[in-house]
Amino acid sequence: MKKSKTGMRILILAILFIAVVGAIYNTAFTDKQAIKEGAKAPDFVLPELRGGTIQLSDLKGKGVVLNFWGSWCPPCVEEMPALNRAYHKYQDDGVEIIGINISESKVAVSSFVQRLNLDFPILLDQKREITNLYEIDPIPTTFFIDKDGIIQKIVIGGPMSDQTIQRYITQIMPE
Image 1 (cartoon, helix red, strand yellow):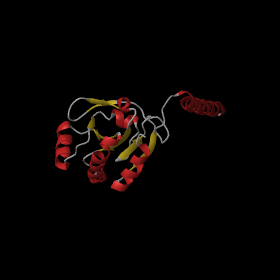
Image 2: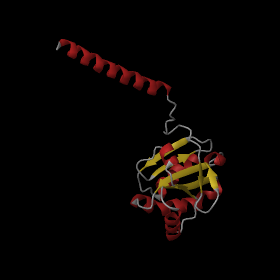
Image 3: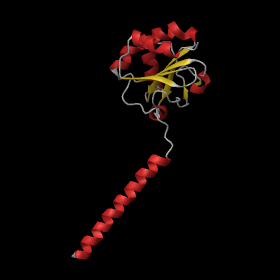
Image 4: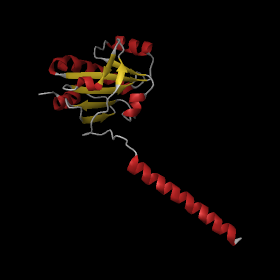
Protein backbone atom coordinates (compact mmCIF):
# COMPACT_ATOMS: atom_id res chain seq x y z
CA MET A 1 0.00 0.00 0.00
CA LYS A 2 2.82 2.38 0.91
CA LYS A 3 4.56 1.74 -2.44
CA SER A 4 1.46 2.75 -4.45
CA LYS A 5 1.07 6.01 -2.48
CA THR A 6 4.74 6.86 -3.06
CA GLY A 7 4.41 6.09 -6.76
CA MET A 8 1.31 8.27 -7.04
CA ARG A 9 3.06 11.15 -5.28
CA ILE A 10 6.03 10.87 -7.62
CA LEU A 11 3.69 10.85 -10.62
CA ILE A 12 1.85 13.96 -9.38
CA LEU A 13 5.13 15.78 -8.68
CA ALA A 14 6.43 14.88 -12.15
CA ILE A 15 3.26 16.23 -13.77
CA LEU A 16 3.49 19.44 -11.75
CA PHE A 17 7.17 19.82 -12.63
CA ILE A 18 6.43 19.43 -16.36
CA ALA A 19 3.58 21.96 -16.13
CA VAL A 20 5.78 24.53 -14.35
CA VAL A 21 8.65 24.07 -16.80
CA GLY A 22 6.20 24.40 -19.73
CA ALA A 23 4.72 27.61 -18.31
CA ILE A 24 8.17 29.11 -17.75
CA TYR A 25 9.24 28.18 -21.28
CA ASN A 26 6.12 29.72 -22.83
CA THR A 27 6.56 32.91 -20.87
CA ALA A 28 10.27 33.27 -21.56
CA PHE A 29 10.71 31.97 -25.08
CA THR A 30 7.56 32.52 -27.11
CA ASP A 31 7.60 35.66 -29.22
CA LYS A 32 3.99 36.81 -29.14
CA GLN A 33 3.62 40.49 -29.88
CA ALA A 34 1.43 42.27 -27.38
CA ILE A 35 -1.33 44.21 -29.08
CA LYS A 36 -1.58 47.25 -26.84
CA GLU A 37 -1.34 51.01 -26.92
CA GLY A 38 2.24 52.08 -27.55
CA ALA A 39 3.07 48.91 -29.52
CA LYS A 40 3.77 48.71 -33.23
CA ALA A 41 0.70 47.65 -35.17
CA PRO A 42 1.26 44.24 -36.79
CA ASP A 43 1.48 44.40 -40.56
CA PHE A 44 -1.01 42.54 -42.74
CA VAL A 45 -2.43 42.33 -46.24
CA LEU A 46 -6.15 41.84 -46.87
CA PRO A 47 -8.38 41.97 -49.93
CA GLU A 48 -10.51 45.06 -50.35
CA LEU A 49 -14.23 44.69 -51.04
CA ARG A 50 -14.01 46.78 -54.21
CA GLY A 51 -10.95 44.89 -55.52
CA GLY A 52 -7.24 44.87 -54.90
CA THR A 53 -5.53 44.57 -51.54
CA ILE A 54 -4.35 46.88 -48.81
CA GLN A 55 -1.18 46.34 -46.80
CA LEU A 56 -0.97 48.25 -43.55
CA SER A 57 2.74 49.04 -43.94
CA ASP A 58 1.99 50.78 -47.26
CA LEU A 59 0.12 53.43 -45.24
CA LYS A 60 3.20 54.45 -43.23
CA GLY A 61 3.31 58.24 -42.98
CA LYS A 62 -0.47 58.44 -42.54
CA GLY A 63 -2.70 58.14 -39.53
CA VAL A 64 -4.78 54.97 -39.75
CA VAL A 65 -8.08 54.06 -38.12
CA LEU A 66 -8.70 50.28 -38.20
CA ASN A 67 -12.24 49.35 -37.27
CA PHE A 68 -13.04 45.64 -36.82
CA TRP A 69 -16.76 45.02 -37.29
CA GLY A 70 -19.55 42.70 -38.34
CA SER A 71 -22.98 43.46 -39.76
CA TRP A 72 -24.60 41.35 -37.01
CA CYS A 73 -23.19 43.70 -34.33
CA PRO A 74 -25.61 46.55 -33.42
CA PRO A 75 -22.92 48.94 -32.05
CA CYS A 76 -20.84 48.32 -35.20
CA VAL A 77 -23.78 49.26 -37.40
CA GLU A 78 -24.52 52.32 -35.27
CA GLU A 79 -20.99 53.77 -35.53
CA MET A 80 -20.58 53.22 -39.29
CA PRO A 81 -22.13 56.57 -40.32
CA ALA A 82 -19.77 58.42 -37.93
CA LEU A 83 -16.77 56.59 -39.40
CA ASN A 84 -17.96 57.46 -42.90
CA ARG A 85 -18.28 61.15 -41.96
CA ALA A 86 -14.76 61.05 -40.46
CA TYR A 87 -13.49 59.47 -43.68
CA HIS A 88 -14.80 62.38 -45.73
CA LYS A 89 -13.61 64.97 -43.21
CA TYR A 90 -10.02 63.67 -42.80
CA GLN A 91 -9.14 61.87 -46.04
CA ASP A 92 -7.27 64.91 -47.37
CA ASP A 93 -5.42 65.36 -44.06
CA GLY A 94 -3.36 62.16 -44.25
CA VAL A 95 -5.76 59.91 -42.33
CA GLU A 96 -7.03 56.58 -43.65
CA ILE A 97 -10.15 54.98 -42.23
CA ILE A 98 -10.40 51.28 -42.93
CA GLY A 99 -13.10 48.85 -41.92
CA ILE A 100 -12.16 45.20 -41.44
CA ASN A 101 -15.14 42.91 -41.73
CA ILE A 102 -14.90 39.72 -39.74
CA SER A 103 -15.73 36.47 -41.56
CA GLU A 104 -18.77 37.49 -43.61
CA SER A 105 -19.25 36.73 -47.29
CA LYS A 106 -18.38 39.30 -49.91
CA VAL A 107 -22.05 39.44 -50.97
CA ALA A 108 -23.26 40.14 -47.42
CA VAL A 109 -20.60 42.82 -46.87
CA SER A 110 -21.31 44.46 -50.22
CA SER A 111 -25.03 44.61 -49.48
CA PHE A 112 -24.34 46.14 -46.05
CA VAL A 113 -21.94 48.75 -47.49
CA GLN A 114 -24.44 49.75 -50.17
CA ARG A 115 -27.31 49.97 -47.69
CA LEU A 116 -25.34 52.36 -45.45
CA ASN A 117 -23.67 54.22 -48.37
CA LEU A 118 -20.18 53.66 -46.95
CA ASP A 119 -17.29 55.11 -48.94
CA PHE A 120 -14.23 54.18 -46.90
CA PRO A 121 -12.24 51.03 -47.77
CA ILE A 122 -13.64 47.79 -46.40
CA LEU A 123 -11.28 44.84 -46.05
CA LEU A 124 -12.42 41.22 -45.87
CA ASP A 125 -10.99 39.01 -43.12
CA GLN A 126 -13.02 35.95 -44.02
CA LYS A 127 -10.64 33.50 -42.33
CA ARG A 128 -10.28 35.68 -39.20
CA GLU A 129 -6.49 35.68 -39.57
CA ILE A 130 -6.08 39.40 -38.87
CA THR A 131 -8.87 39.32 -36.29
CA ASN A 132 -6.87 36.67 -34.42
CA LEU A 133 -3.56 38.49 -34.98
CA TYR A 134 -5.03 41.63 -33.40
CA GLU A 135 -6.70 39.58 -30.64
CA ILE A 136 -10.14 41.04 -31.38
CA ASP A 137 -12.90 40.27 -28.91
CA PRO A 138 -15.45 41.86 -28.63
CA ILE A 139 -16.46 44.01 -31.58
CA PRO A 140 -16.43 46.74 -32.52
CA THR A 141 -12.78 47.29 -31.75
CA THR A 142 -10.98 50.25 -33.26
CA PHE A 143 -7.25 50.98 -33.42
CA PHE A 144 -5.95 54.52 -33.91
CA ILE A 145 -2.45 54.17 -35.39
CA ASP A 146 -0.04 57.06 -35.91
CA LYS A 147 2.12 57.82 -38.97
CA ASP A 148 4.95 55.65 -37.57
CA GLY A 149 2.71 52.59 -37.17
CA ILE A 150 2.37 52.90 -33.39
CA ILE A 151 -1.02 52.16 -31.79
CA GLN A 152 -2.02 55.32 -29.93
CA LYS A 153 -5.50 54.29 -28.82
CA ILE A 154 -7.64 51.15 -28.77
CA VAL A 155 -11.38 51.58 -28.36
CA ILE A 156 -13.15 48.36 -27.45
CA GLY A 157 -16.93 48.33 -27.74
CA GLY A 158 -19.04 51.10 -29.00
CA PRO A 159 -20.63 52.75 -30.67
CA MET A 160 -18.17 55.62 -31.01
CA SER A 161 -19.59 59.09 -31.53
CA ASP A 162 -18.35 61.68 -34.01
CA GLN A 163 -16.66 63.49 -31.10
CA THR A 164 -14.84 60.37 -29.88
CA ILE A 165 -13.58 59.55 -33.37
CA GLN A 166 -12.46 63.15 -33.92
CA ARG A 167 -10.65 63.28 -30.56
CA TYR A 168 -8.55 60.22 -31.36
CA ILE A 169 -7.99 61.13 -35.00
CA THR A 170 -6.45 64.44 -33.98
CA GLN A 171 -3.90 62.42 -31.96
CA ILE A 172 -2.79 60.43 -35.03
CA MET A 173 -2.87 63.09 -37.74
CA PRO A 174 0.49 63.52 -39.44
CA GLU A 175 2.01 66.96 -38.94
